[in-house]
Structures are given as structure tokens and as C-alpha cells.
Length: 390
Ligand SMILES: Cc1ncc(COP(=O)(O)O)c(C=O)c1O
Image (cartoon, rainbow, N blue to C red; front, top):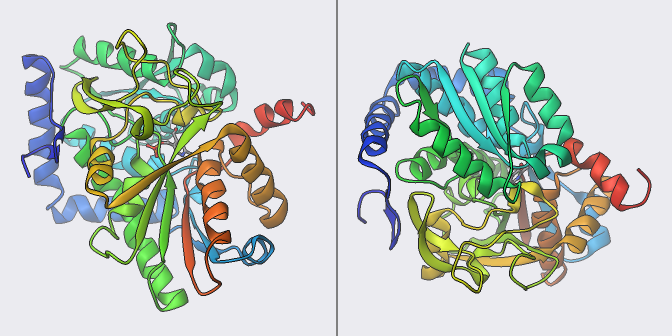
């Protein structure tokens, strides 16, 4: 496969100056990932700072009430800062240090990537600048407050006010600050080498889950299910199973309020191939062929593009992509909370909702492994308001 490409998707479509920076990042990443000292440092932080390995949890009550297959959760919600995002942030921050950078610029949607970056910046004495759409700033106040406490500068972005605008704004800021800053992207998106780097640091999720399920069940899961915004938690868990053809991989996009333009974020289902934000992938378009506004009740899923590897996995049929609407996600949010005592992030609730639907159609000897990408603390206020209780 061509370097930086997943089938026809990926690559790098940026200015010459930015390409020079990305080449430097790629060279350092390639050197570090084989470096024992770097890997020991990373493992040490994964264990003692992030709290890895995260548990694999059998939802016995929920599985029995739901009927059908056994439902397991990979508990990425139990990571320090509450989501899988810190897995790649810790790697990206170490990379920044090795490149001699003093500042990290990043975007965030749900605030989980921003919170994780702000946290590792505090730990490693790096300046931190987080770009966030004004809609998400209001919706994810809990995370914004934490980022501020950690010392991050928050840049509140206008336009549509969501993740797409935050990425545009962060990329613009990075282009004015190549000397001191590094851009740390929040998913397996962006120009090469970002999708490859983020995938590498997220692959720990899949590797751990494979060891854990073999130990607990003596076999691999029949299905692995994960929500897809840009696609980092999904690639993180899928990567360990790609060669195990008997394991079905399912990515869950947000169907939002419906199939009309601007009502969902189901990029693989409704998108067209194009170059966007420096890479080639599937992109949601409006009637004028402009990039459409994406929507989901979950701020971390409302991105109008998707990681290039997901577009490829869909094309070749190795992974299947489905969608779950706002109402179904909210229903799964309540169910997991009330039945298992685990409050999931609204993003992860999409994966839980599909996992439940799927498990019902399968026999009791089957296993559905759902990646619980994050916890719902950030969503509690919003969900209570939705329920009329806030
Ligand atoms: C908890 C959680 N899960 C999933 C996502 C979606 O991102 P990705 O598709 O890169 O995993 C986000 C994004 O903010 C998130 O906060």
C-alpha cells in the first residue's frame, strides 16, 4: 500500500511548509516507536498515569435482560480523564517533547481530547492551546472548566460552532507557529502521518482486550463494536482483530435526527470521496457540493469526515458501518446507567445501543465486545435537561 494511504484514502494535501513539519514529525515517530527507552517511558505512563490496563467487564445483568449474546465492555471510560483520548495524547505529548516543542495546539469536540491534551501538557510542562466550537464550549462546560484549571488557553471558535470549525481554526493557528508548536490531532484523521500515529498509540486498547477476552472466555469475540466520530477508539480496538477474519468489526456512526443533510454525522453511509482538511476520505456534502454541517447529540461524533482507514475498511468489506440515532443513543445511556451502574459518554452510548440491538439477534454462546470509549460525566447536565429534570 502507498505510504500514508489506506487503499485510495489518506495521503497528505498540505502546504510545502507544513509538509516539512509533518515529515519531521514522521521521522521522529518512526525513530521513537522502535526505541526501547521511549517505549518503556510510554508503558510506565500508561500503567501509572493512565491506569492501564483498563478492565474488560462482562455485563451479566444487561446481557440477561437484553436476551441473546453476552455483552462485554472494554472500559476505556476508566482511563485517567475519562476516555480513550488520553491513549494517543500521552504519545503525542512525548513526541512533542522529543521534537523540542514547547507548545501543543489541538482541537476538541466533546472536550475529551482537549481535556486529555491539557492534562498531559500540565504533566510535561508544555503550553496548551485548545480550539473548540462555541456550541461545544456551552454544551461541554464541565470539560472546559477542567481544561482552564489545567492551564490551557481555550480558543472559542465561531462558524457552525462544532468540531469541524475547531479543526480548521487549530490548523490555521498551527501554520503560524511551526517553530514552537506541534499540532496534536484528536483522532485518526488529518494528513499523513497523523492517522498512523494516532492508530499506533490507540492500538493498546485492542491488544489488551484480545488478551483479556481469551483469558475470560477462552476465545475471541464474535463481534467488536465501537462508535465512530473520526474513528480513533474504533481503530484502536479493531486493529488487533483485523487479521482474525472470524471476528466481525462494526463501526457505529451517528444518525442524529435523520437522513437529511445537516441532521446526522453518518459519513460512511452518506459521504462522498474528497480531499478535506489535508487528507482524502469520505466527506458529508450539501446540495452545492460544499462540506455539510454534521450533527449528533454527541459532540464527539459530529464531524463531517472520517478516518481514511475506516473508509477503506468499509470499501473492502472488512468492517461494517451502521448508524444509531439520538433517541436510541439516549435510551442506551439510561439502560447502561440504570442496569449496570455505568454512566457512558453519549458517543459511547451509540456503540452500546448497537451492541444491544445486535446481541438480541444472536444466540447465548456468542460474544459482543463493545468499546466503551468514555464516561458520561460531561453529559450528565445535558441529558438531565433533555429529560426535563435539569
Ligand atoms: C468518549 C468519546 N468517544 C468517542 C469519540 C469519538 O472520537 P473517535 O471516533 O476518534 O474515537 C469522542 C470524541 O470526542 C469521545 O469523547
